[in-house]
Image (cartoon, rainbow, N blue to C red; front, side, top):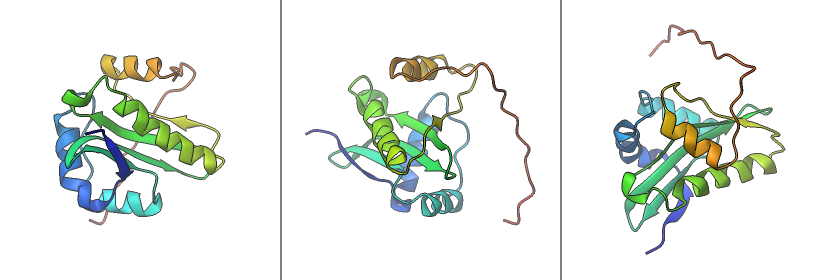
Length: 141
């Protein structure tokens, strides 16, 4: 049966987090509440791929009104090299373009060589003019 694609919902959380945790190059997964908030702020932009009921892949996508961002793209090893990752990304990019978002970015760990290879193969370029910096903030939860 062919792989089908649908919008990610919070119902997908447990399966998606298990996939992310089993995938190289993806850091800690957000909590159910954090993902629920992300999906609510970016409705319809994140996707799952399934063959029958089996999860084949997933990606988070959102934007701030100016730039799009993809997070945690993962494809189960048995579904790799079949176009699942590319199809997930293309769905996200199409929706961002429809919202007139002119650019999309990703973040990769510096040692994620297979991830870098994938992104380059589907047309993404490495930005050498930027450095990413972060700060952890205290939260109330």
